[in-house]
Image 1 (tube, helix red, strand yellow):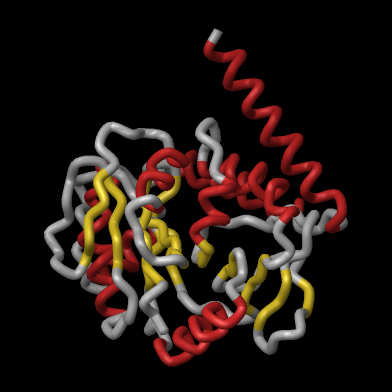
Image 2 (cartoon, helix red, strand yellow):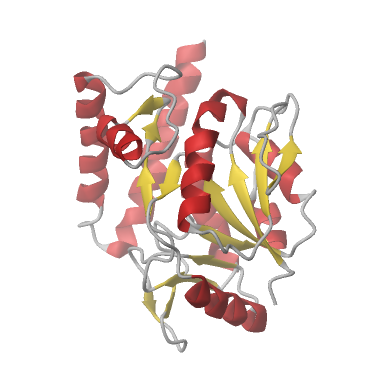
Length: 265
């Protein structure tokens, strides 16, 4: 049943200092994981025999490196995980296998392993539909993809953030996007914009995980205030009527892209 499923941990070499605590947490909290685990990086191989390396070499863009990885994975469905989201509680493998059974039977394009804004009840117990037109139809966080759909939606000129916003529009041609009504993988967000969240770093250290404190900085007070502003902006967007959220996100993404282009000239 699981032979068509794989886990892909998306990373690259500058984040290799996160791999020891990430996989220590992974093995501790999901010791009976039934799926093969692939790690996407550039040139560096993580010395863990249970983790299969996929090396992207000098490929730097996120869409190109993901495409490179997907083309080297034989399995039809890929659970995408990110190296800065640390699994911090025990995974119920039995419940996960029930989900795998459902995916095998129905072959959806995508299912997010946590609840999200905009989802509506479906005919399937414990699983909601993500209808076309909602702002948050694509997220790379804890997302299980049918590989052909993922490959179809990737664009070489987008960042991971732009993919989530602009890629959501491209998903409208696929009716079978879903989200689970419960969270399957409880994760702690450890790093943003290359810096540790201080509380997350302390929590991981307190849990006995091998965090390399000298390898990357922690957020300063100013960094944390800026992060709070970004999170506040996102929370404000959640109170906007559903039919307008996507338009606002697209406008904001296009504004930032235009500013970046102007700044380069």
